[in-house]
Length: 330
Image 1: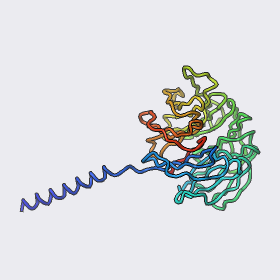
Image 2: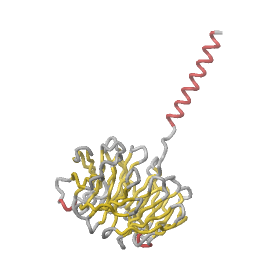
Image 3: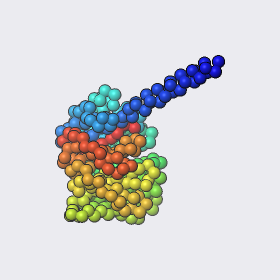
Image 4: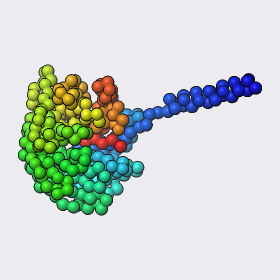
């Protein structure tokens, strides 16, 4: 009897061991990244398991801003010279629809429910409001000259738009769709990012060479992130895209022609490290597990992959011409 019990236990142990080995050998879940290529008028699809381009999707003229719908079923891409937002089916990886926008859409933001899309239209100084369910344009909000940066507060009550020529961050009430405050920042603001706890908004100024930290309640600049890289002229350091970890401890800031990502301690607003990436780095995106950060490098036509924990570039992936925006499946 004891021998039978021992045999049964041994069999169960072997089954458990084999199951464990099978799970350990199974590949990690691969996320899918979409990169807009401004000059080749394409979107590159990257598999983050193999770090390879698996498909190139032809889209309209001059694609830039790109993001997934909240349900992950579609990818929206702003095709500036076609004055529209094209919609890619994430399953078939083909263009299936378009959304109405103003002239030269660049970046956009959507509410938490994924029902309303706000689009910055660079050529007519407006933000277009779109009903995503009805695929209908609800109206426009007049903002400063050359609007680009777009972000929405975690509670969905405040939309931020940055205007490149007016040098302002516009605070817009999403209920009234009216500007409630204008905050002056440094020259040519390109991108805005809320901290996840809503306590601050970070706005990058490309020509000013700084990131302004704004108190969203007081509508005041309360600090700035500055950059200094030995051997580079100050005018070569041009911050654009910003990515902030979910714990709000670390920010990764793309520095354009400086060809580097600045790693910033959010609490002190000090740069702790510079990571050399491809040429003319534009925008960044985290994989959902925050293990990796991907950057679009416009002049070298590639994407750099950064190991977030190690703060080290581990891979370069060739994509289309002038990669600009990047979105990763939720």
